[in-house]
Each structure stands twice: as C-alpha cells, then as structure tokens.
Length: 309
Image 1 (cartoon, one colour):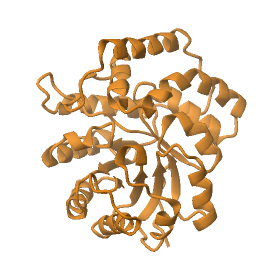
Image 2 (cartoon, rainbow, N blue to C red):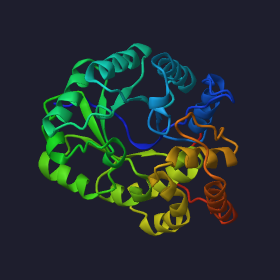
Image 3 (tube, one colour):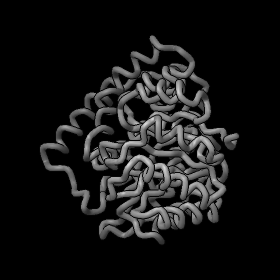
C-alpha cells in the first residue's frame, strides 16, 4: 500500500538566486518562492535541475530547503530535489529534507555513474528506506543518462513511500505503459514542458514546470484546462505558450528559463559556472521569443485560479 499524497497541479522547479559574486542569495530566492505561491501555483520543487542542485554545496541546499519551508508557510507542498553521486550521499540529503519538515523529495538517479537497471532501482530503494518522506522518482535520461523505465519503476511497487513518477523523457508512452503495468500505484507527473497537455491526457495529475517560473498563472491555467478536458481552450493557450515551453527542452534550459524570469521581473538571470551566460546570439533569440509572446499574451480563461494569501 502506497502512502497517500495530495500532489497535483503545477509545481514550478524553482530557480536558485545568486549574488553577482555567485554567492547564494537566500533573500532573493525567498522572494521568488513567495511570488510563485502568491500567483497560485499548486506546489514547489526546490533544488531541482532548474534550481542548479549540483552547483550547490550541501549547506546551501539545506539553506534553500529551510527558506522554502519558512516562506511557503504550509500554503503549498514543498519538495526538495535530491541529486547526488552516491546512494549514501542522497540518503543524507533526504534525511535533511525530512528534518527541515518538507513534504517530500524528488530523487534523481545517482549522478555520473551509468548504472544497470537493477542498480538504478537499488538507488531509489536505498534513498526511500532512509526517509519517511514521500518520494518522487525523477526520470530524465537525456540529462542524467540513466533511464528509469516502466520495468524499473514496477520493481519498486513494494516501497510504500515511493509514490510518484516524474517523467522528463519526452516519451509520453511511458505513462500508458506504467499504468498498464501497475495501474494507479504511482501518481504521475509531467516533467517536460512542451509535452504537458499530452501528458495530462494520458494520466499525469501534476506538472513539474520550468517555464512556469516566468509565467506561473499561464502554466497553472494551461494545466487546469487540460485536466478539465477543456481542450479547445487549452489548445489555443498551448499554441501561444509552445515556443516558450520548447526552451525547457534545451541543454541550456536553466539559462533560458532564468532569462525569461528576469525579463518578467521575477528573478535574476545569473547562473553558476559551469553554466555560463547565453551567447549574444542565443540571448537575442530568447528575447525575441519573449517579445513575441508578450505582445500576444492572451487573456486567461477562468479555471478557478486563486492567489494564495
């Protein structure tokens, strides 16, 4: 029997903010978090890929977790990304998330090492055993190389606190294959922005979104339209949104998303090395996409979106 969770809707993968000297800017990060919650997102993912997890020290990750806990004030669930080289290291971070009082952890495969399927499963199993928090399994084979296939996921059904599967492979067939194998055992989350409507149609009840950092109300509205089966309205908004959502599928997605966030006045575009600023040409291309989008920014249909107090 899996643990019950209430995760659904849009969970932006929150950006981590830095000072000009690349020091962690906790105050700015807290402002970003508060702004997203006030704009009505359903949850938050901190220290994920877009949060530059692997560029943060252990103490910085804990500081971001604590800030998210304080700022969110229980208004929405807060989940921390766990991206480490080894299972023991990942287990330690998961324990810290539990100590801080977060609502769950999003666990990535062990980084750097290209594992065999049974080793991939053992990593998730090991981290899950180290904490009582609900665990979201994060699959992103283009970035993290190890593919969490439906077969691997099915082998983890006995781990009660592994409750959620976030797929960023871009292959939406994974949702159907998973359901055919294990039914509704796992809560399904879309993890790649430019296949979100298709993912919802196939059973995703949540979306870990990059571009919703810059456009939280548009992201939440799009998701709710798709969830409600209001596909004609969703299609129109999706067509407007798609050039922006494609930025989430690029290798330099963090730089692109942070630039869009900066243009919207929501945060800084500064990233930590090895992530370097976009080239002049790349920056101009993203700015052009943003300029076109903002000139045609649509009025949003009513989906019951309410700002959090």
